Image (cartoon, rainbow, N blue to C red):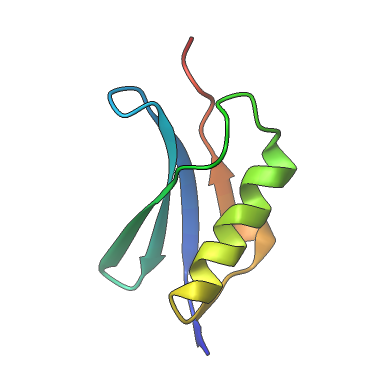
Length: 72
């Protein structure tokens, strides 16, 4: 498995869903997390980011994941 540099989980207000942005070198892989409510905790969102990266074939360090707060 390849190692991703880091990741960011953000709330997309227009689509009303969380998205994972996985950074691998200069490449950015964006994937939605459609089954998760806006009120999900940070730990749950980080785990979903790790699972999404794994599905894409990347290993991701939990300490390298940033979670942006959802705007009300």
